[in-house]
Picture 1: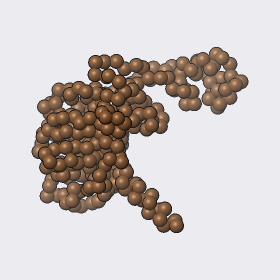
Picture 2: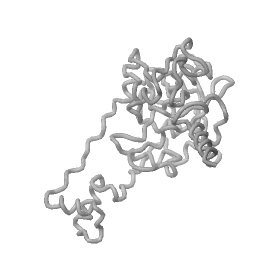
Picture 3: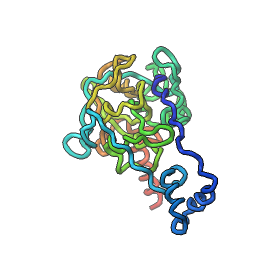
Picture 4: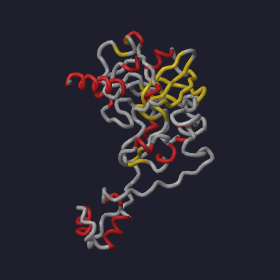
Length: 287
């Protein structure tokens, strides 16, 4: 992780407090007394949607730009078929990484989990001598050790970004509520040499959290201090693929149904494979 990925400040709340003469009426409306509320109050709440969680959120602004052809820019060959991003400089990062060099921000938390270090179970030591079978030797991770970061976050200031619904291919079926990411835990395939590894999206970077034109469009990663790096991967991914410090890799999004068996299926409360195994075991025990 590098400091620029967390440099974006939360957007200031531009919504004013309710006017004194409308305060009680707005509260009355918020209690779902819709039919007996005046048009004046309904109009006020419509223009101040954050004051009333049951009012439909305003539609995202249209996103324009030369890189956004349509909503399926990241797709090729039909639903569920994603294009490869070729020759992307790939850097290594790890949970618990301390500030150093081009990484002045510690990796104790992620873009979506302020307790990432503790939820994982500890320091994901990158030293090969302190690892065995793709995990640290001194504990069993509580999350998937095969994780990665890409330079886009669909949430900012506690709210879903305007462009997210238009640029993320799976947004419509994955969206739950405003401010809840639809990116965390998604799978990608990473190709290097003669091997392909699979990992889950757990953080944002390197360097940026706004580069949707690269992540979901057809542009290259924006220039940065690490030779234009566009993908961060964990020590487990590094070890499986035999990566150096800044090797080029190919990557693409994949649906869970297309992820084959491998060491990425073994660990983690966030791991789709582990979750399904536990559900199956519970069902078997209940019979």
